[in-house]
Amino acid sequence: MDTFAKDNLPPLEDWPEFSNLADLNYPDQLNCSQYFLDDAVAEGFGDRTVIVTPDHEYSYARLQKDANQIAHVLLDDCGLQPGNRVLLRAPNTYMMAACWFGVIKAGGIAVSTMPLFRAKELAVMIEKAQIKIALCDVRLAEELQSAKSDSMLEQLLLFGDSELEKMMSSKPDTFENYPSSADDTCLIAFTSGTTGTPKGTVHFHRDMLSICRAYSEPILAPTQEDRFIGSPPLAFTFGLGGQLLFPMYARASTILLEQATPDLLLPAIKKYQASIVFTSPTAYRFLLSELQDGDLASVRTCVSAGETLPKPTWDSWKEKTGLEILDGIGSTELLHIFISSRADDIRPGATGKPLTGYQAKVVDDSGNEVAPGTTGKLAVKGPTGCRYLADERQKNYVQNGWNLTGDAYMMDEDGYFWFQARTDDMIISSGYNIAGPEVEAALMAHASVMECAVVGIPDEQRGSLVKALVVLQAGYSGNQELAKELQDFVKNTIAPYKYPRALEFVAELPKTETGKIQRFKLRQSRTAQT
Image (cartoon, rainbow, N blue to C red):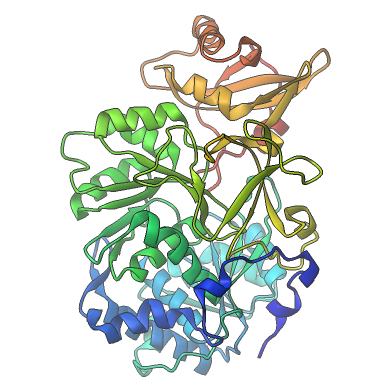
């Protein structure tokens, strides 16, 4: 067995405390693909649809067969040893899902990568995770081929009416899953890069089930009749949970779109009669301007994560659709959402309360819990937690057994958690602590603003200056008059000292592939403009 992943876990003393594992009562031997896929077929769901694409509907039995054949290819033709890392590169397609399960069944470790990553980024991941085998959509091969030439990657199999399908066709359609342990690694997920160099986060077989039991089962309460849809890539843990693991855990189905931009997501929701939607605040804001009567008739639950959900967006969505968005916060380090609103317990503007099995608190710089109503650092622990792959930054993320997520939060007297900013987005100007997202929420309430980002920029007099970068709705022109109107609007909405003294109109904001605004790029590249 290849012990690379185990050998490169952080020292045990740097791990977070894992709570609630005894209650979850996982068996020592656990290959998570057994529950999601094989047990579903054994329970009689083989003929039911599990994945819907624009071209086809696939059953649980078909997915099981294809995953089994991919596992045989990995073992017989690629010489995969249990514990080997396998890079997966594809949009949200059926074959991406089949390959993910094939790797897990064979005892490999899936390393899924975003479709937009270039050769340089892929090479970093190949080197960091020591990857020798890759399965790639033929349409995305060029960048990976380029990365392969200068890396340790040895075997690259392409799929999409290509060589992998030909190799699969001669393999048995049954497979005996590798007898993994519950705490064997099955996934290395790289962070999405909102702050620069990505980190590899290590997750176990048990973690795949934990997020279903902690979040999907009690919060979404899906049934076999539900149809999930969303925009995040399967390579992003938000998408892996929301668009593959959660529906399969419930024996429901998922709609996979290769391109799930807001303008394509909305017609797909209506066409395929989706009932549970996973997407970002940015997408919800766009959909508001495009919605027609009947577009969301099938939808019962809307989930938002990835970045903070501004209250104006929540209010507008509720007013126009009658649906209440379930806000939540998760991280690649903890695999998925750990604080969330609930359908029967929503406080608009608040992220929500910790999921059952998770604990959360707000602490100061010394790790001491602060009083309700005080802004500090969010600390979390539960059945999942941060384990970076050979990365000194583990010591920053995990302290005294708690995961420090990098978010500034405030907890109110009733136990609801309110997002203030990323800790590196707190702006200190003239001695005042100003949370960028609070200013963003104020700006978002103005009819002219499509989206915005607020950052601190250096200023000799104040230390830092609050600067807003604003993308306007169609029909508005960015000029001095509108800039002054927006600044006055913020002054009249929140404390006047928080208003953006610098304001710039831009055509777009830099984002990761998962839709998060890359504020660190704005801080690095922008200078004050009024």
